[in-house]
Image 1 (cartoon, rainbow, N blue to C red):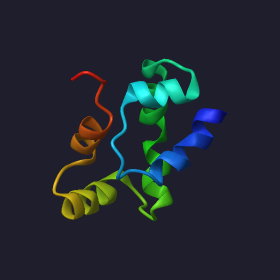
Image 2 (cartoon, one colour):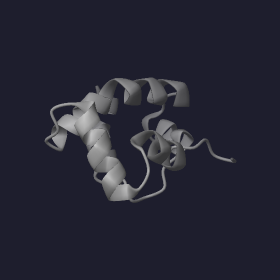
Image 3 (cartoon, rainbow, N blue to C red):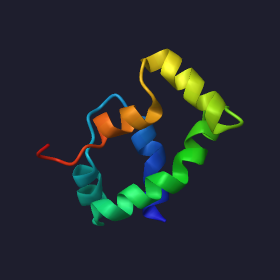
Length: 82
């Protein structure tokens, strides 16, 4: 699936400001579909960074960035115009 393949590319560019609208436009799908895909792929994200479970990933993420992964997602993937 092209969305799943594109997630690795997005992970490599987490420092860039991304919105659901921009990602949806890039893949020609709705922002609701993108949101759905991200919810199911969070386990792939933390496993790709070597974490066995989400709680370990959460603690390390919060220690590194000072905010939770959810807060980060809300900042990085906010709808355009907000």
